[in-house]
Image (cartoon, rainbow, N blue to C red; front, top):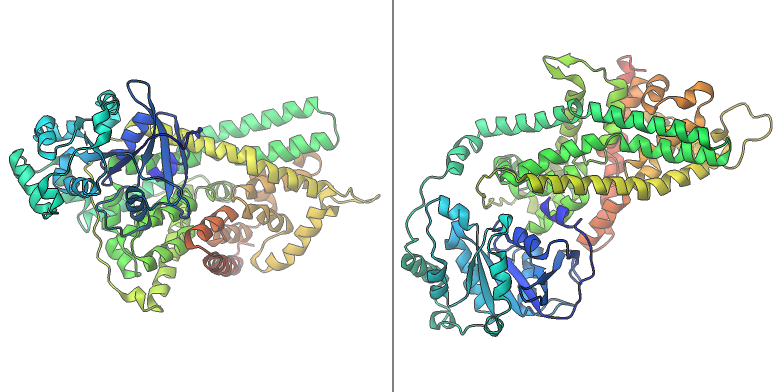
Amino acid sequence: MSENRHANAAVVHVHRGGKLVALVGNPNCGKTALFNGLTGSHQKVANYAGVTVERKEGRLVTAAGKALRLLDLPGTYSLHPRSPDERVTCDVLAGRAKGEKRPDLVVCVLDATNLRRNLRLLLAVRRMGLPVVVALNMADLAARRGLKIDAAALSAQLGLPVVRTVAIHKEGLEELRGLLDQPEVWAGAPLPEAAEQQVDDHVTVKTMLRALQLDHDLPTLPSDRVDRVLLHPVAGSVILAVLLFLLFQAVFSWAEPPKDLIESGMAWLGAQVGQWVPEGWLHSLIVDGVIAGAGGVLAFLPQILILFFFILVLEESGYLPRAALLLDRLMGSVGLSGRSFIPLLSSFACAIPGIMATRSISNPRDRLVTILIAPLMTCSARLPVYALLIGAFVPQRQVAGLELQGLVLFGLYLAGILGALAVAWLLKRFTNSGRLVRPLMMELPNYHWPHPRSIAIGLWQRAVIFVKRVGGIIMVLTIALWLLASFPAPPEGATGAPIQYSVAGWLGAGLAKIFEPIGFNWQISLALVPGLAAREVAISALGTVYALSATGDDAAQALAPLISQSWSLATALSLLAWYVFAPQCIATLAAVKRETGGYKVPLIMTGYLFGLAYLASFITYRVALLLGGG
């Protein structure tokens, strides 16, 4: 998740020449916060040459005004790589990275609350012969826990410059900038005799901590006391289930007022524009194509932001790794480990960052299975479809004190999760490697209150991405669909809606024969086609198709009332089942191709998802008809 947020940072030009500084550190040491503080908006994201792991680069300006290139390397615990992102860090430091020179200087970021582990990576980096500066980060947290770390004494022990920092509050950053102006820092310090002889790092670290009087056991922390409850096999699992359930309840109960406001605003805009634009093709394009299409999607922005708010809070608080640990036993029963949980949870936002996050999974088989089932997690692009159908066909009422619409949404998310677990179980059952037991080892960061600024930035970036999609690919496809739905003109004497005689009408009628067994009419069948580019486009496509299909007063109706009047309950339930398993958007399939290095896995994914979606819709539709939903 955090990786995806940084990928949306402002993109500026950064010179490839000049001195290169690399940030290195363990995961969760505050390295990315330090990178953001040092570079501000002067950062860009791309991929390392030849691999799909992202490279975050920025421009750092020293106290004397000297511009340097700053590279934020993926977090690693050692220089013995076990995953693609750790391998990139090792290759860059060793000068083996394609298209990237070896760093001129390394800023090694240490978590002051866990020097015992962090110092081992520092010693390994120093043995590579690179000039090193130490940023002693999270020093405020260490002080609150009774760890009095003397930065000068640590510097003397290491023989390296040490700067005390608190990256999230930008403390120590100016001192670090000033340090980078000193020529002797770039020359590097000679290796101590112990490092040259490659004495056991464990012994070296133990000796240093004893000299610094930091070798005593830490007191029981508040995080430890909280974990006794949140990591309890029974109580912790119940709390996790309640948190996820409340999330889906909030998506509907909190979003309704702003959603109604957006819908009213778009309806007013359409009416105003319609008065100024004379009747004809331009009026139809703007009112029925652009406003009806884009407005239908924008109305679901509140639900998406609420979903992201909860995910960001869970991530920022340090709870997500605990959830992975709680689910390790469940994941193990289907042949995966809890390490797959975080990529799968990221896929609830969007499958693309979820698939990219599988790079942290060292086992190739687990990584491939996680990629294959990630699209079954209900991404935010499905949310507009779910919200439209639930709002149109599920009444707003309380069941046992809970919102019925929220219960249905929770059930749809649960169906996707159970489908993913079933696919993973089948792969475990019928592959030899799936039966191997892989224990989970994962660092549990300390709990902390989410930083409001980080939450706000994450929500703002998600809103910008969504609006850009509406103004970009969704707008283009909506206009393209309007063109197909408007030409050719109906023949003389035609009695039906003009769209029925258009290219789109012919295409929809043809597809309807394929989807008729699962209850889809020609309008739905037609909307599925542009929906392959981005799921939200299905809503704008339906809005455009029904706006062009309507006659008389019906043309002014919103989409939800139109479909509630013209579709059966069985059709609506069938379409919901389709979107639980529907084949992924083209962008996701492209991401899978990049991650797996070929077309084989994307083709397998498309085939099995299409088959699951059709089977689920067929069963749902037939059962609903039998129960009187026709």
